Image (cartoon, rainbow, N blue to C red; front, side, top):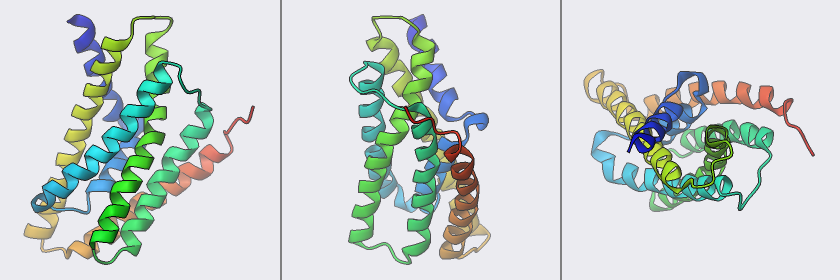
Length: 196
């Protein structure tokens, strides 16, 4: 049980770590444009992201797929930039835009899962029986993700309902600010890509 709690803690601390804030930015831009009343839509959106990153996290840690870590580190902010642009360009949420959002969350989850896996692999070292640690770490990631989602929804709710900020203005501000940060990350990480 000690191993489980340790890897669970490492999972949620990894996604909530301000030093590796790229995952926080992604979840914030993915969910921060919704309100608390939209919790069902957010649940489906986050579930799509979770499915995506759970698949590649497991496949990568179990050495079924092999990744270029520097390329994944570059692609993570690319997912943030793209999600920010989708938020800015989609003025109204139709059924088609929601399907697009769910598909992107699933696809981008695949990329983020490979990013999580490089960290988990470094923790596991040469350990061979990793199923329990993998499960605990993934559940920890989900717990951390829920904390970020709740925070993003609460901030949106407070600004739109109490500060009377128009929801579209909040979406534009949040998405534009995160776009700017992620775009700089893309440029910095592009020059660190190591092609083999």
